[in-house]
Image (tube, rainbow, N blue to C red; front, side, top):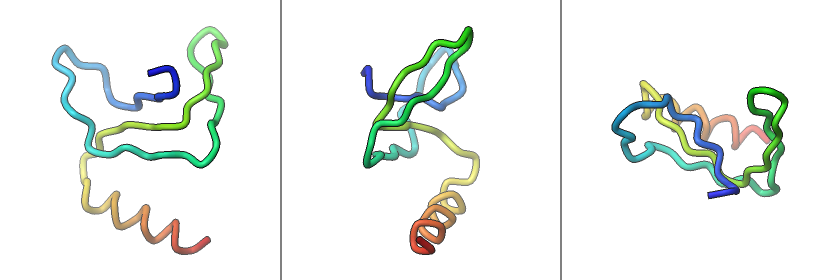
Amino acid sequence: MNDLFDARVPDLIQEKPMFEILLKDPQVYELMYGLKRKASRIVLNVDEPERFYWEMLNRLNQK
């Protein structure tokens, strides 16, 4: 769990994430009060999953 950045909105009942993004190299992110952590995985939920998926594919193919 130390290498995970949970980008989902906090809720009383946490549902399974829609997407999990695996990063090539761990990245540093900043929390409140200047705390820093490293993550190699990001989990998130989105409102329009299909649109998000295709947009990610398009952007990854551009590189």
